[in-house]
Each structure stands twice: as structure tokens, then as C-alpha cells.
Amino acid sequence: MTTAPVPLSGPRFQTEPAALYREMRREHGAVTPVVLDGGIPAWLVLGYRELHQVTGDPVLFSRDSGLWNQWDGIPDDWPLLPMIGRRQPSILYTVGERHRERAGMISDALEAVDPFELRGQAERFADELIDTVCGRGEADLVAEYAMLLPVRVLAILYGFAEEQGPGLVTALNDMIDGRERAIAGQTHLAGSMTELLAARKASPANDVVSRMLADKSGFTDEEITQDLMVMMAAGHQPTADWIGNSLRLMLTDARFAASLFGGRNSVAEAMNEVLWEDTPTQNVAGRWASRDTRLGGRHIRAGDLLLLGLQGANSDPQVRTDGSALTGGNNAHFSFGHGEHRCPFPTQEVAEVIARTGIEVVLDRLPDIDLAVPAEELTRRPSPWLRGLTALPVSFTPTPSLGGPSA
Image 1 (spheres, rainbow, N blue to C red):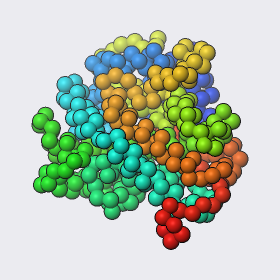
Image 2 (image 1 turned 90 degrees about the horizontal axis):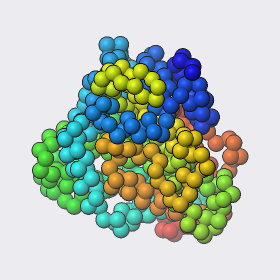
Image 3 (image 1 turned 135 degrees about the vertical axis):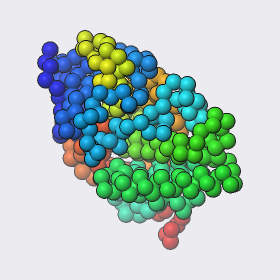
Image 4 (image 1 turned 90 degrees about the vertical axis):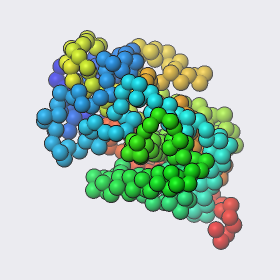
């Protein structure tokens, strides 16, 4: 078994991640040694059973980043600090009973969302976005649609005024696109959340923020603000990529051609296949070993960082021997995580409604839609963490907007 660590960077995460994960598994096993920016060591868990073990044991494999044995070598400007940060007052870094209480608060606040209202808001914003492009006969369904839709819907559910939506879209997308813009985006999002909390403390309403403030578990405003920021960021980008990756699959795979001409049954099938084969969240940081242990034949030291290889585990040949994981609505993938720190079920449901509604509106509104470039020219974001298209150019017969010619 090869022992030299693999850099968690490079173009293959963008161009051929499936082949790369297969090579990692063949050469290194289910738990692969990797190096992060600056030569920082970590383990990438690619085995389905091993990942199940890590995510199912929050005591041995803790979410407490304070355990990390590499902090002495981490500079203040390390580019991955926003993702692998020191202890922060958010649900990402709480453990034990306090984590369960926070997850319960978030779940209760989102579970109370009216599903008909959620779908209605998603349809409304999706139609408004399609109205801006439908008369042209061409569009980029990533930049002009998928990257604009989820946060607009989430903002309304949280309690933001509708006119604040575009600013939040810019802030969230800036946080994704680059370091300098990321700081400005994060500042705008934090300020907006703080203002919303103050407004809802003074005047509660029927929204997610008001329900979180009404929780009796005694969380501070700072804790709730941090959780809201995490929820907004985690709900926006992966959902946008889920829309884009699913539309790409439906436009390039003949199995889904019928859905482009009035059928709808295959939309859910395409979305589920993406979660197995092309999941938006490829790898996640992380867990930290609370003591020395063994995993997948590897000696893991106390304080070692383990990265969750969600896509690698989804494609583990030990559980995908016949491809059956893609049939019958099987959702035993890791795309939403597993165990105590998995995405709460109501957040999954919200993401699924937004993504499916967004895809269906595209298929309803844009007749004879087709790719405007050859499929092999579509490119992905150069990231080992989040997998999404940089653009999805399409062409179609121009149609009037729902608001009429003047809309």
C-alpha cells in the first residue's frame, strides 16, 4: 500500500474526481493520507463503512476542532481557516448535549415551514429569474439562475424583507468566489443577520428567526446568529450546485430525455443520481480523533484531522458492486452526512423542494432546451470540497415572460 500523502488540490478534482478517488482507494486504501494547503497533514476517509464508523462515533471522532494537533503550525492567513476554524460559537463546533439542543432548535424552526408556502416562494422566484432570460433564447443556468435562487427563498423563510434578497445573493456568492470578496460577503451576511435578530426580538413574526429566538434552551444572540449564517451558507451553495448538476445530467444523458418534453418522473431520479454520483459536497472537514485509534488499517493519532470523503464513500465498490444504489429511490448515500452531525432532516427537505421546484420551472418554461456547447466543454469549479459547474449555457426557443412583454 502506498504511503506518500496525496495533495488535496489540483485539476483532477475538477476534471475526473471519480477516477481520482478510485486511484486513491486502490493505492492507499479506505483511509488515505492527504496534505492540505501549506503541507498540513490529514486523513481522507473514502470507505463507506469507515465513514459510517467515523460519523457514527462523535466521542472518538469529535467535531471539536480544539483537539487538532496541528494548530501550532497553522498561520493566521491560512486559506482554509474559514472552513477548518478554531472553536466558533456555531453548531458546527459544538458537541454532546449542547449540539443536540442546537440541532433541535434548528430542526423545530425549519419543520414549522409550510411546505406549500415553501414551494410557492420557490416557484415565484424561479419564474422571476426565468422571466429575465426567456425572451433571449439563451442563458447561463448557473450564473443567471441556480446561483441566484436558493438564497432568495431562504431569505424569505428566515424573515428578511424581499428587497434585501439581492444583497444577500451577492454576499453569499462573494463568500464562495474569492478571499477579498469573501470577507466582504461574510461581513454583510453577519451584519444582516444581526439586524434581523434585533428586529425579530422587538417584533416576532411567523419565520425561522422568530422561532429560533423563542426556543427555551438559552442560546445567546451570537450563537443564533452564527447558526443562521451556517444554515444560509450550507443551504445556498450545495442546493445551487444540486440544481446545476441535475440539469447537466438531464441535458446530457439520453435516459432523461423524456423529462425535457413534459415528463416529470425522472426529475427526482436525476436528483437522486446526482447525490450518488456527482454530489455537490464532495469532501467535508472534519472530525478530530480524541485518542489514538485504528481506522481502515491506519494508525490514527489523537488530534489527527479526518476529512469526510462523501463522494468517495458513495462510490465505494464494497457497497456499489452492482450499481443498485441508484435504483428504487435508494437514499443511503452520504451526501447529507450521517450521525449526530448530519444535516437535520428538515434542512434536507427544504433543499430538495427548492432544487426540484427550480428544475421543474426550467423544464416548464423553456421549450426545446438544449446545451449551447458540447457537453465535454462544460467545466467544474476547481475545488476538492464543493463540486458544481462554472457555467451551464443553454439555448431554447424564445418565449414571452409571465409578466408580459413589458416585464
